Structures are given as C-alpha cells and as structure tokens.
Image (cartoon, rainbow, N blue to C red; front, side, top):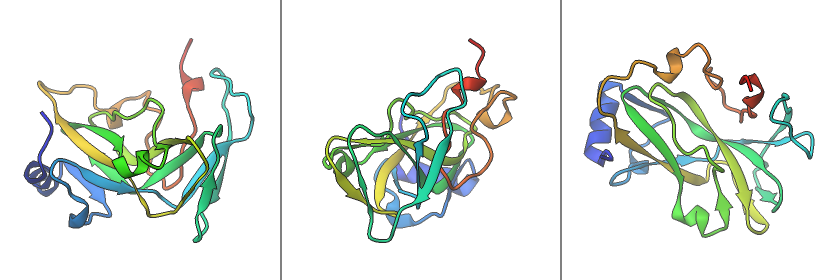
Length: 178
C-alpha cells in the first residue's frame, strides 16, 4: 500500500516521516516532490573499479544552470533531508524530468526503513540538457511495511550511507567483502 497525502501528513505529524525543508505545496496526492540540491559530482577516473574507492570531485551548479552531457554519470543530491522510520521510501523521477531525457537513478530508487539523509542521485541524460539547482527532480512515495522491522538502516553497523550531508556521496561498494 502506498501512503496517500493525508497519511503522509499524519506520519509527518507523528515524526515517522521527516522532510527538511518541508513545503506543503510539494505534497501530491500520494507523493512528495524533491528538488535538486546545489552540488553535483563526477568520478575522477573514467574506469571505475568495484573493489576500490573511486573518488569524486564536487562542484556547485551555477545560477545560470549546468549542461549535462550524455555518457557521463553525475552524482547529484536532493535539497531535502529525509528520515523514514516506519515506511519504505521510493524515489522516482518526475515525468517532466523524464521527458527531458534525464534519469535520476540507475538502480537505487528504494530506500530502507531508517534511512536518514539527503538522497544521492545517479543522474544521466539522453541528450545535452541544462539543469538548475532547486528544480523539481523527483518524488518520494512511501510504502507500508508489514511486521516489525528489526534491522533499521540507521542502526546497522555496516550501513555505508549514514551521516547527514548536502553533497552527493560516491559508491561505497569497496567496503563490501567479495
């Protein structure tokens, strides 16, 4: 079951969903619109290695925008910091974003119960497109969980993407044992 706007509001009131900054006008019938933060990042190497720490370089999106180029993976971040303590959050691109040929995540659209941070976006595009900080980029939807959650993300010892940040975070795959 996906939460409706009235249930999202009720969960915000209870503190089980936190969105900062929160603006009521971003609440849809069953989702909440999130916006592109002011930072992007790109990997420093053209060939990435899943077993190694691949470093990134951050840069701020200028006021007059930034032109994304096809063939480059950009890491972005939502303006909004979120916490989800009792539901499974999913981040999907807005249809208007998709119609510009922008993908906001490669595979990581689902969050975990207990995720507390801004969302790192894996941005790619079909053709060159100018983007702007603060533009609507995606929408969060919340699914109900059944049963108690024992292993909340923010309590896991091996959670790799915790700690509040306003910048995109690179892959931490290298921290896994394989």
